[in-house]
Length: 105
Ligand SMILES: [Zn+2]
Image (cartoon, rainbow, N blue to C red):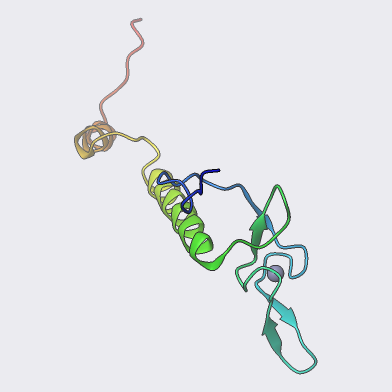
């Protein structure tokens, strides 16, 4: 019987779901104030497949990967043309010069 040593080296993205207890808010309403949700390690996320909390070290990695993906998306939304600055400049320059756009009539 071979003993397995910890998780594999390659980090896989775990599908995360909203914590059913705090509904993704990471806190629950206590009697007087909000308390950290202990069902999801106060992250608001659980493993989508099992509905259970991730271990803290795994949670940090998964949140980091999600954050990076989200930041990439934000950058892409800021630059929807996904083109270099020159193309953007040329485009606005054409409009600014008031160049007529003949359609070949
Ligand atoms: Zn929770």
